Length: 284
Image (cartoon, rainbow, N blue to C red; front, side, top):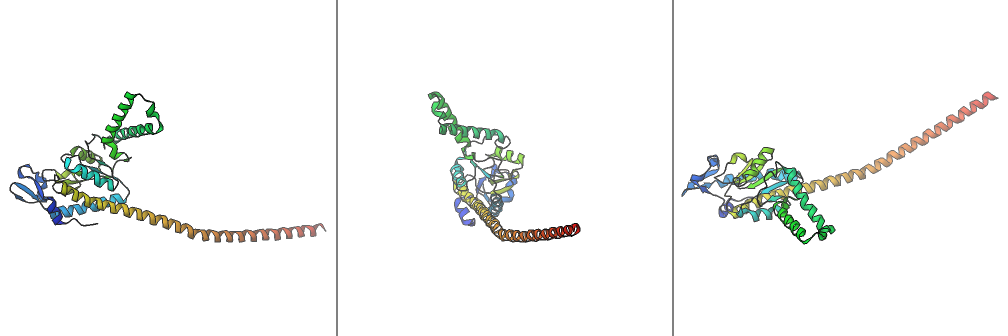
């Protein structure tokens, strides 16, 4: 995995914070200086925090759990959609549906409804509907696809939330905090970092900075997924090898058991012969 470089972040404008008058004092540890009324973010701390977040997300991906990406702001939508699709992770880039985490069963019902409409279109049921009903169903399907299409494969609550702009996505962050789901986020100087478990201090308005940081994070997740595949393949190979090694042992045990059975049968036959001879001698 390529490292996040200082010069790259500088060129992408990741160091530009908000106006000094709009700052959140809790972000003071991540601010390097103030210039022309604008806070400048300490990029060395950005790199350190990004590495920490990447390592944690890598382990989550390695364990086979899902990470939900959230970014509904214009500058981040396309980037999040592109990066999340590459690593096959769910994402939300339209309006955050309230209660998506805290009322997850209801969201799953809506997703199931979308799947039912797809089934209707495949099995021919859709063709039996009237023109007006078809139009209603099509519109409903399009609306559900826009809102929930990216989380169609999310069958359970995500193991982590990655957020771009924690102020804009505050409802998602609050829901995750309530459920104890760890939150990873790109946090600007006007935001409150106390609600984020893994803070990555950076400019959350620059699309280049978002793209650079997300690319680094997604590379780490991809590594975790690849390591999981390798471990599963190694485990399967080890199991197969154990099975192959067990076959000769079973065969040897079978041969020993057969010999013991033959010995027992021979012994029983001898005993029966002796008993028969004694019985015959007594009769005489």
